Length: 307
Image (cartoon, rainbow, N blue to C red):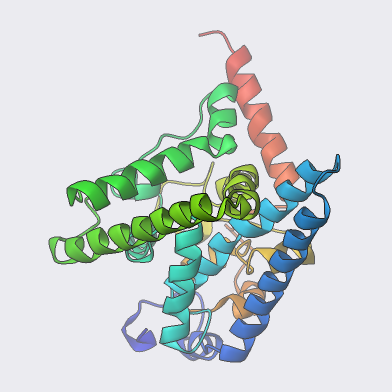
C-alpha cells in the first residue's frame, strides 16, 4: 500500500509509515500460536470421545477454528506477513475452512472499508440489524451465515453467475473459479470420508465450526452495531477493550476503530496506534459482555415500548 497516496488525518504520515511495517516474524508467531491452540483443542476433542465433556471440547475447538476468520481478515489485507505469498496462502487455507472464498471476501471486505456504515453501499449492511430478541438470537446462532455461504458459493460454482455489486465484471471469472475449486475440495473430502468410513472431517471440522460460529457472530456484532452512519472511522466503528487472551485469539481485531482508520497498520502495531489516537469522539466498549448486555437491554426496551 502506498502510504503517500492515502488521505492521512489525526496522525503524522511518517508515524503511519513506521507503524505500517509488516513482519514475517510477528505473523509467524501469531499464526503459530493460533495453530498451537487448534492442535490442543483438537487433542481435547480426541481425548474426550466417549465422555460427557465431549460437547464442551467440541465447542472450545470450534471457537478456535472459527476465529481463524481473524487470520483470514488480516491476510486479506496482506498485513499479517511481509511476504505476499504467505498472506495469500493463509487466506486460501482459512477461507476453505470457513467456506469464505478469499478473492470474493477481499472484494466484499474492501467495499466494506470503502463505504463503512453507508446504508446504500456497505455490503455488511445488506442484512438489517436485529430489531427484536428473536432476530438477535437468529443472527447470533450463525445459521444465517452458513446458509448464505452455502447458497452463494454454490450459485457461483454451479451457475457461474456473480450478481454482487461489489464484484467488478473483470473479477467474475476468478470468483467463479475459486468457488468451483473449493467445492471440488469439499466433494473430494466427502468422497474420501465415505470411502475410508471416517468421521474425522465431521468431528474435527464441520461440527465444531457450527458450534463455534455463534461466538464469532457475537464478536463481529461488536464492530459496528449501534455506531454512527457517517464517514468518521472513530465514530462508525467500535473498539472493544478486552483481555489478553481474547486479543491473542482474535489477532488484535478488537482494536477495530484503529484498523478502519488506518488499514495499512498490521495487527501487531494496533495497540501502539490506539495509544496515539485521540480519545475524544471514539466509540468504545469496556468488554463484549457489557456490550451485548446493553444491546439486549435495548431490544427488551423496544419490545416493551407500546407501538
